[in-house]
Structures are given as C-alpha cells and as structure tokens.
Image (cartoon, rainbow, N blue to C red; front, side, top):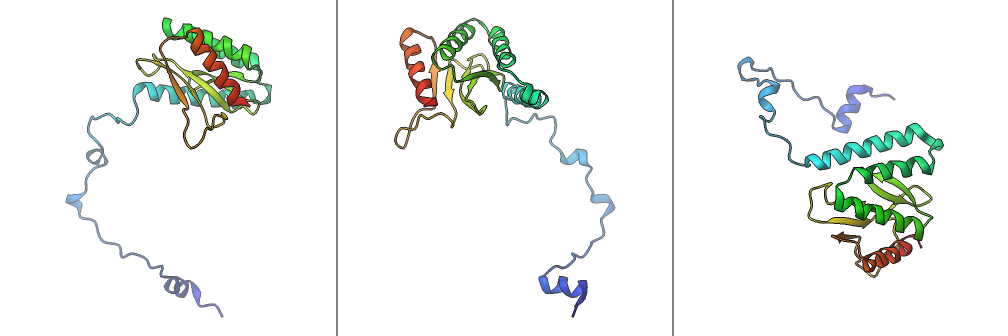
Length: 181
C-alpha cells in the first residue's frame, strides 16, 4: 500500500522549511558582501603561475595523447632550462645531463613549469625547482612519492642546492638510481 509522497517525507523527517518574506530595506547587494579591494593571499603570484603552467602541461598531454614522444617533452624541458637565470640554468643543465646519462629509464618532462623526470608510467620521480621560480635563496632537487627512497619511518624528499660540485652530483646519481630501483 502506497502512503504517498507527503507520508514519505514525514516518515523520513523531510519537511519543507517555512519561507519567510524578505524585508526590502535590509537586503545587501552582492557587491557589498564580497571582499573589498583585498587580494586573495592564499597563493603567491609565482605559485599561481606554476599552477597555470601545470594546467597547460596537462592540456598539452591530453591533446598529444599517445602521439607524445620523448623528444617533444625533452625539448620542452630544455626550453624551460634555457629560460632560467644563470646560476639556476647551470645547475639544471648539469642535473639534466647526469640524470639522462646515469638513469636512462627516466624521461624528461616539465612539471609545474620545472624540469622533472618521470618513470615509464609517466609519474614524476624527481624534479628541479630553480631558486628563481619562487624567489628562494636556494634551488631544490626533490623526489615525489613514486621514488623508492623509503628509509625507516622518516627520510628526506628534497634537497637544497646552492652549487653542484662532484660530491653533490655523486649523491644525486646515487639517490636517483635508488629512487627508480
């Protein structure tokens, strides 16, 4: 036996709220309820630019689809490196060379407008953040969760770089090799 919609609502606790008439003089315009001329401070201009770059990268990946080849992605990385100011560019060029030669299984690609290196599934394993990107005092070489760097209950996932010497290069090569193992 059907009890009808009204019975259903009453049985489930659904009730329409009583509509109250609005008062003409007390309504605020949409303009007056929004923030004044204050700018949203959740993200810096640099962070917003990086997000826009990532959106463009994702759209480009979708457009290319399966046609994407490693040469296109590598040229995009090299173009981003070429745009960097001097100290960052030198480090990025050197990192690119040592990662490509020591771990050829990783493919270069841009990630948030930065040079990054992805595994065969296209997941970013490691990346270089130039100091100039976010106006920091040092560049960063970092690893994502796909990197196999687990060491006990705590391990580093990014490293500050102010200069690349042979010692740092050797550490980076060892870390990247371990990350893809």
